[in-house]
Length: 247
Ligand code: 13P
Image 1 (cartoon, rainbow, N blue to C red):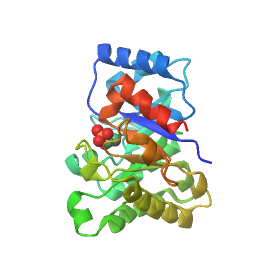
Image 2 (image 1 turned 180 degrees about the vertical axis):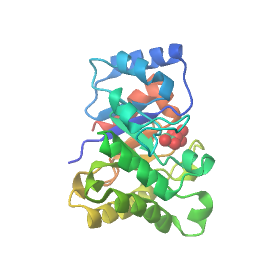
Image 3 (image 1 turned 60 degrees about the vertical axis):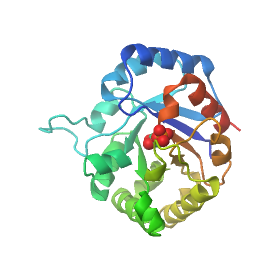
């Protein structure tokens, strides 16, 4: 039985004051019988770490460089993320693939850099609406995941995968539990062919997960938790999603 994992992706939201309130609220609301983490903007990681001291809520970042160090202005390395205690880093989010032209191989290299420094990559895959309508969902997510599997090799079993259909992100449209499960099963099979640890790996669903649809999504056999955007910014909503994962 895989323990569920719920990760809040704050994206480019927050302020010192708002974060303090949110984190204090989460501390009060937890703990839950699920693993919980928040992935916050870089400038707030240190304060988040302090605020979460003594709790079981983990924290992480939303991106990292594929390089260890050097003349890469504006980038943040996984060495730095490890230094500051990050457990997780999201890589390959569709917003980075779309707005920063991140390729499958760059995403894979970022995942590899993270693992090399003890930070667990949460590797996002997902199809656009046009790709789904063209019947390409399976081919797209398999291509995205294959690049990572190929690059990670025997470390494949150490990542977390997140299936986030692009058309469901921030739109209020969610894949139905059956639609999401179908893709998760494809991803599980692909992982199974690559590593004998696939049965223990967590595949998260993301895309308009809310308090009222989380339980049904999380009840699917291959959905092991969620990557939560908008609803992770409100204590009551995020806490309810964490509760839904705890069954
Ligand atoms: P929403 O939950 O706001 O749809 O965002 C999902 C997401 O992109 C999480 O990474």
